[in-house]
Image (cartoon, rainbow, N blue to C red; front, side):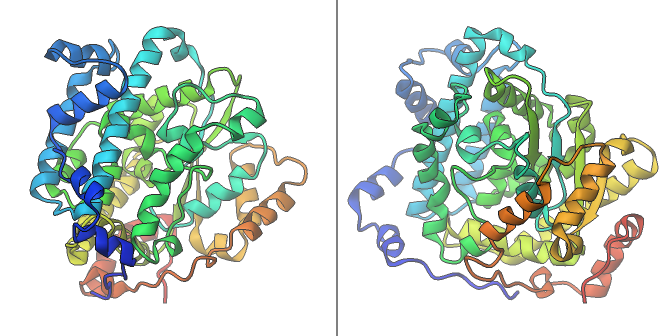
Length: 429
């Protein structure tokens, strides 16, 4: 494998050595179900006295708490037994889980106070749903430059309650922005070079999996932490809870804003397209494609860096195997769904990573046309401004190679031949 452990800033090395007592004490707090549930409810002014209290505050008739809490319980076992967290990683994990529990409690309280929020219509949302590292971020950025589109920002998906103000000045001054910024930027300060792979921030577009995490059914858990038992559970799960939670979060965010043209993004949708269309029957989906070996090598490097921000033990070969198997299955399913007519093909558009590099504006314009969307005036100029504002290499170059996958390239090519042939995906090199 070519991945090497990035340098850690000196302050992180000091923290992980246990020399900053307040952080070491926070890291020593229990990562147990009872402790987390108790602290999260106490922070929100509640007290848990029985199992029925858990259902009452963390659940709702249509969103029962028990399945979500059981998934959390299994994740906590995995993070204790498998993740090998260092001190800073344990602190970040604990804060992440407490935030999820607190916000789930807020979401359920909001739903009980305003049950009509579920009448909010999420009309024809557009999902960017290609595999990771295939141009999804570029496309999402270009679509976000269309002023008619609403792209959820990081702070909105981390803390959607109460609904943000529709007034631009109040929206931009929301105190949740700084609160979310601290969480989102944290891993970028713990590991040098992470910014060159993917940039996070409270005012930046955020992926759908952050909304799904309130169901404790999201790849956020498996991307950050080496938890193979929980990953196996996630891969075998019916993901409807995650999608229903995703829809509810959008409905809350839309409350008071009127009709909204949502543009959303996450590679996780590639694995669950039938459930996505079941949840959003009029959805439109932009699938992006790239040489599978290149995207998997890049993804392996990204996940290794994310896990290195939480643990001293990172196994890039295991990461490569995990994602190789997952995407081999998903691409096979995609071919089957497409061949058997199981997806509404008129609501899906395909494009290629190389096209976004050579002609990003023209490629995005072709998507508009294919999906029956009208380009606004000055659209091309807005898109070029968006590209110029954040060039791909502004934080350095992300380096990786096919060697990250650790297997014979010819054998790997055979595993993806059916997918590449079906969708005309060229091999690099």
